[in-house]
Image 1 (cartoon, rainbow, N blue to C red):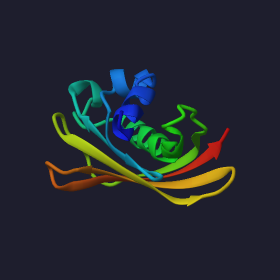
Image 2: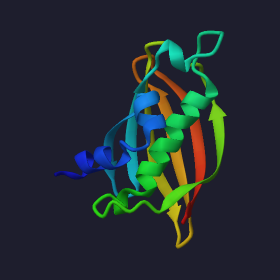
Image 3: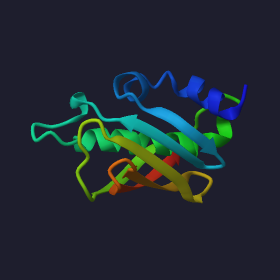
Image 4: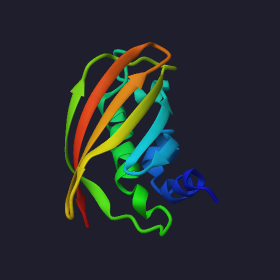
Length: 137
């Protein structure tokens, strides 16, 4: 089984991100990951644009996959979010595909700093930038 398939199998138990939010892992590598989510009306607020929480869920999940990439083979997950700063830059609408791309800026013994961009490639816009501090537990 290749690493992408293993990652998808391992993170399938994160049901809020995968089953409820519909996020799919598109790529995973050395402290980096790419995830996609097709926005539905369920992800949107009363104005018809993506809720901040939906965008953050995508970023948080992608950061978790990237940070834990070295543990996918063993199935042991050690990194979780400690805090995050989200910069919302543009609205995303129903039926837009959001792509999260995350990489580690710095990985230490107990903390890591992850950088995630959320884009809507089909709409041609950068939706958000998220900096996440992860903690090893």
